[in-house]
Length: 310
Ligand code: SF4
Image (tube, rainbow, N blue to C red; front, side):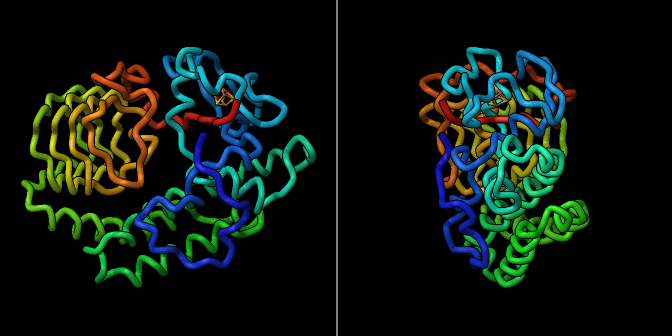
């Protein structure tokens, strides 16, 4: 189960110097109306045992909005559910934006499902901005990061109409300027070779023991890559596709913009070193485990729901 937090507790608060990973930016399924299990579509594949349209509840979603197969998702053919992260958008939309569930008030269901991905995008940006603010090397741009965080958080507190009117792409572009500056500052401080592999096709690449300190791996396709014992300290991993990548013994401490969903989709072991805001997935134990899903670009950008409970 994800961490829990008090409902609606972000209103009016300034971002905390939390070291990244604020609890209100983590999924709290106990306070969510199962939005990722209803609002998002998925197709039968290695990630999901069945197909489902957007707006239709997954048949495994129980009446109490918990997943009926939570403890056996991988064994039941739903590994895709274990690698989705709403960054706390589920509880925000459920408890702050609406307050009543789509079951209690079906008239709001369609709008709730439209609003959810908007808030999810904004919360993802909040996660990155929070992490950026926690880094000492970004001190020269702290004020700008804090301003962007506060503006983004204000957007998340809007009404459904407000939220549906947000130009997410434009806002993301604006925030990304600061994230790029953060990346430059972090990577310049690592002393590594700082390879620029932004968006690179590294599917299945043999990068065992590679020196990737300070590397720019933004949006890189690292599906199934061998990154065992690689040195990824200070690397920018925002949007990198790590599904099935082998991170056994790799050092990711000090890497930036790595999310729990990316880690959950990869393989690893007890020797893998993660940034402190992230937790070691339960399916990592001993030698690197098998990939969570089949590799392939066709499903690389598809939203994949996850729902704690049970
Ligand atoms: S976590 Fe996955 S399987 Fe469980 S209810 Fe949600 S979508 Fe369905």
